Length: 94
Image 1: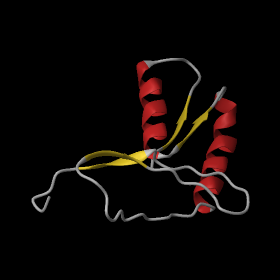
Image 2: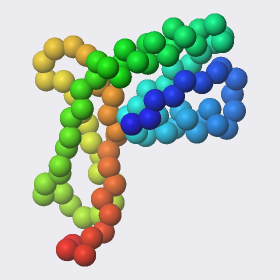
Image 3: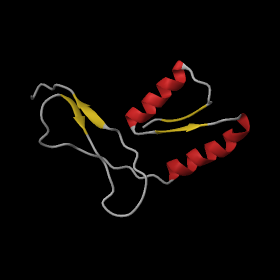
Image 4: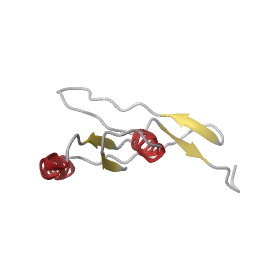
């Protein structure tokens, strides 16, 4: 899971960070000015300290390749940050 803080100017590295955070189920914070960095990093720390980690071990999954995964809350309210799926590589046992 990737967390990133970046400045507002567009660049290829910013686009890369946006993609990586989305693909890993992470979160991206954008900072408009240097004076906002301290508050933003404090928010990042609060977020990391208050998260839960759920581990998923697939069973009975089809062959190799991409498998979409949806994570949602049954009850209650909250934000879910999760990868959109996972890739299963070919193994000798398949």
